[in-house]
Each structure stands twice: as C-alpha cells, then as structure tokens.
View 1: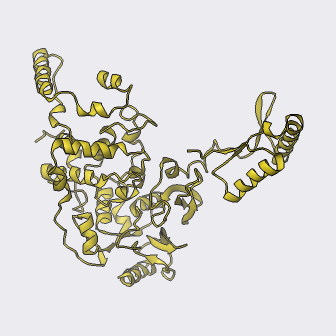
View 2: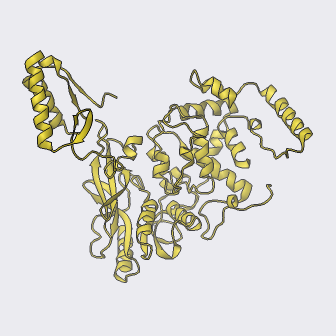
View 3: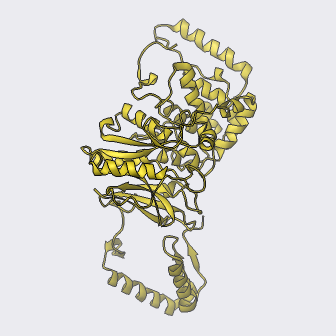
Length: 135
Length: 265
Length: 65
C-alpha cells in the first residue's frame, strides 16, 4: 500500500500551474491542483485536471516515428536523430536557413527552449521560431 | 489542537485500529494530502490552515474512496471537518464507502470560518479537537433573493458566461463519483463548446447535487472563473430542506427523499 | 420539478416557463387543453431572456429545440 502525492508543474502550457499527481501503488489515479501554489491558487483548467491521463495512455508515443514509403514507422532514437540531421543539412545547403522552421514546446523547460532558439538563430541562421503555447 | 489529533491518530495506528490515516502534510513548502501509516512518523502533519483556518483543504474523502476500493478489507482513519463528516455520511448512504471501515477523526472549525461558510454544522460528531462552534444564521441566499427577477437573471447569466468548462467543480467534488457524468451527456451538453449552455450546464450539476452536496465549498475554491457555485448549491440544499425536510449528511442513517417513490407533495 | 422550478426562479427565469404533465396518448382533449393553457401562460411572459445570451447562429437550434 503506497499512496503518494507528487508535486509537479503542469506540462500543458507556459503558465506553470502547480499540481499533485496522486498515485496508489505506482499507478497514477488523479490530478489535484495545489491549493498553496501562488501560481494557480488551487485552480486548474480542463487540460490540467486531466494531465495524469496521457502518462499512462496506450496512445502515447514512446519511440520516434519516421515516414518510410508513406507510412510512419517506429525507429530507434539514433536513427531518428541521424535522419533529422541529414535532412536539415541537405535543406540548409540547398536553399538556406530560412527554408527551415523550428517549433518549440511548452512541455519542455526554459533551458531547452533557449537551446532550441539558439540553435535556430546561431546555428541554422533563421528567425523562424515558434511554439505550441501561442494561446 | 494539532497535538490532540496527532496523539489520537498515533493511538489508533499503534492499536492497529486503522491501517492508515489520511490527512494533510506540510512538505516542499506546500500542503498536500498524505497517508500516514506509522505512529512514529507523524511529522509534518497539518490541519490545512495556511494563512487562515481551512484555506488549504483537500477532498480527502475522494482519495479515501480510491484507497478503499483498492484495499476493501482495511480500515482507514480520515481527517474530517464538519462538512467532510457530512460527506462521509452521504457516501455511506450511497454505498461508496463502508462505514465499518472508516474512522473519522474530527476537527471543529473556528467561528470566523463557520461564519464565512455559513456552515450548518461546523463541528463533526467525531470531534477530537477544536471548537464546538454553533451554526451561524444564513444570509447569503436571502441576500440574493432580495434582488428582483431581472437582476438575478443578469447576475447569474454574467456568472455562467465566465465558465470555461474546466469541470473542476466536478473533479474536485468529494461527493461526485458517477462513472457516467450527466455533464458529459451530449444530449444535454455540447462537447467542447463555449460559452456553456445557460443555465443548463450549471443547473444540471446543481440538480444532480441536490441530495448530495454537503456545502464544503471546494468547488467554489477550485473555480478558475470565481463563479459563486456554492451560493447556487446552498439554494438547492435550502429547497431540499423546506420541501422535504432533508439536509445532506446531517444524520448518520439518512435516506434521500429523491430515492423514494411516491406521490409528489 | 419542485426543486428545478425554484432553481430557475433563483437564477432569474420565471418558473412558469417550466411545466411537466403526464397525459396519456388516449386523452387528446386533456393534451390540447394543457398545451393551450401553457401557451396562454407563456404569451404574456414574452420571449425568453435566455435568447439574448445565445451566440449568433445558435438561435435556430433554440427555436427548434
């Protein structure tokens, strides 16, 4: 019998609502908004309330997918990264940095997002940077 | 006050009367629900009084339901205020919890909290610590009714329009447990559409809670749009009292008038 | 019914707008009388204030509902 509440931050957008992921014997059971959080004061939106669901969802992607012959195929990370780097290099060489766009995520940390835009601007030479939390 | 409860819980755990005590803990600088299993490890136990009395309460009965379903043969203790204990009585009545397997550990609320809540019974029967504050006289519903029909319409329409349909009022509610929720019935409520159907969405929930709501106020606190849901449910509860003489959770062995067949009054 | 009509009144909607009656399919005159009576109640009340709260395009649905 192991009941736990894990204090964490909602991954859905950049607001950063604090919530507890409630788990019983290692399985997530519920999301509870953190009452004492100065960010969300015990409130959540519909996405936040259901944030525990995608973790254990069967539909969750656990491996990268690469399109081969028109079909998405599960591949190892090494292959996916090599493929992406290869294509980026080819496109960059052919038509320049501005033919590449970078789409960041609110589900990752500030530091990772910083790295990504740095890579886009300093590495590839484009300002085509956007993110999923343009709410 | 907190020491009285700690000592009481420690005894219950030591005597093996309960397999665990569901209460609140102060950790990482925040208040969280916690299952205490060891009589010698009650450090951090708190009452949910952060800046004011009862401002960091959690729906412990809901969590108790989750744990009790996984461990139906074990008995658990749970921290209750007056409203939480009324909720327990309701959950016993609705067969969501087994009263032989729950040991409420009661905490009485101070006068100012009881007044802010307009609580019907600010202290539980199973009082271990805290005051036996008498129930304050209610005024909020009457204040609203002093407005005329058009004013009330404007007020509530304005409030309902703010709703973002987060379903937080349902998700936080310790008395909500239906597997199929009428708020997700697409004949009544359009999925993913805003603004909500006025007043269908909110009155559907108010009606559904008529014989359940124990006026704990967690929905009010969880609402990101600050809709005075509690006032709405207070009115529903008031009608149940005047029409049927029923107040959810006031008596241990209550029966709901809505589950009895017969001619209407 | 008892509860809902009072809740409607509390939220600013005339409780006369809500009515539930049990009329058998064999009782046509009772049905006619009931509907006529309901119409006579509703006409002086005028259109529902709720109509104004509906976003454009939803009016149609409300009328047919």
